[in-house]
Amino acid sequence: MERTFEKLGLPYPKPSAYALELARKYGYLPYMIERYMHIFGSKEELIEFLETVEKGLPRYIRCNTLAIKNCLDLAERLREVDIIVKPVPWLPNAFRIENNSSAAGRLGSTLEYLLGYYYIQGLGSMAVSIALDPKPGEAVADLAAAPGGKTTHIAQLMNNDGIILSVEKNPVRAMSLSANIQRMRVKIAAVLVKDILELPIKEKFDKVLLDAPCTGEGLLPIKKERKTSKDLGDIARMHELQVKLLEKSLQFVKPEGVLVYSTCSIAPEENEFVIDKVLSSRSDVELEKITGIMVGSPGLTEFMGYRLRDGLTNCLRLYPHKNGSEGFFMCRLRRRGK
Ligand code: SAM
Image (cartoon, rainbow, N blue to C red):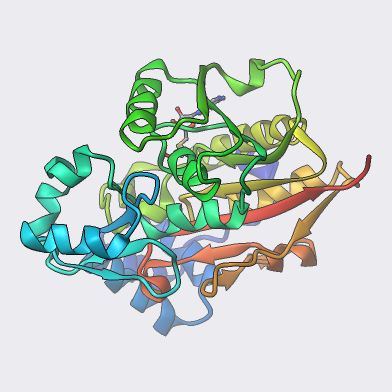
C-alpha cells in the first residue's frame, strides 16, 4: 500500500494525536481525518464538516422540464401528496424536500416520479451538468453514464435537441440508465455498453463528461460505512484508473471542445492530482473557469506540502457543511487547437 502511494509522491504523515481523537469520536479511519486537517482551513471547519456528516443531508429532486413545463405545477402536485418542496436558489430546477422524514421513502414511487416529472438527485450531481453547459444541437458524450442522472439532465439542458452518446461498462447498471432515459422522456441519447478504455475513437464531441468512478468520499453523509471502508491503497488504485480514464476521454473532445471531469469524492488524490498528472503531458488542454454555479470552493493547489498547478483554482469543490450538497469535485477542461 505504501509503495503504491509513493507514485503520487505524497508524504503522508502519521495521524496526529488530535486526528486520532477525532477518528475515535466520529468513527473514521485515522488517515481520513489527518487528510481533512489538510483539506479544511481550520479545526473549526473540520468539526463543522464532521458534524454535518453525522446529521446527514436533505434529499433533493430535479424537476424535469422535458416532461412538465412548469416546475411550480410539480411542487403543487407533490404538496397534494404531502411532499413539500422548496426551490434551491443557486441551482435551476432543483428542489429541496422540506419534510424529509415523512417524504423521503415515497419519492421513488409517486405518480409524478413514474411520469418522469423529476429525478432524485444530489445537488453536486446536478451542478456537474451545469458546469458542462451543453447547448441544443451539440454532440455530447457521457462516458460513465449509469444510472443516468447526468445524461438525463444534459438532455434537459439541450431541450432534447442534439445527440448524446451515453457509455456504461456495467450491463446491469446500463439497464437502469436506459430505463431512466425512457422515464425522463429523453429522445436524443443512445446507450453503448462498453468499457471506454476499449472504445475506438471514431467520433469527436463538442462536450464530453467523465463522471468518473471514485471511492465515494463525498457521499459520507449518505453512506456512513464509507468512514471505514476504504484505505489509502484503494484511493491510490482509483487514482491510477481515473488518470487512464481521463487520458482516454480527452481523445473524444473536438478541438475547442470541452471536457468536464467530476467525482463524488473530496479526495484530492482522485481530483486535483488526477488533473495535474494528465495535464503534465497535454500542452493543448487548459483549465477553464466554471460559470453558472454561484457557490463552491476553488480546487486545491496545495495538499500536504505538495504543490499543484495554479489553474486548479478554476475547479469547484462542493461540501456538505458549506453547500448542503454531497461532497463533489468538478473541473472544466478545454482542448485547444484545430
Ligand atoms: N454519471 C452517472 C450519473 O450521474 O448517474 C454516475 C456515474 S458513476 C460515478 C460511474 C459509472 O462509471 C459507473 O456506473 C461505472 O459502472 C461506470 N464505469 C466505470 N468504469 C468504466 C469504464 N471503464 N467505462 C465505462 N463506464 C465505466
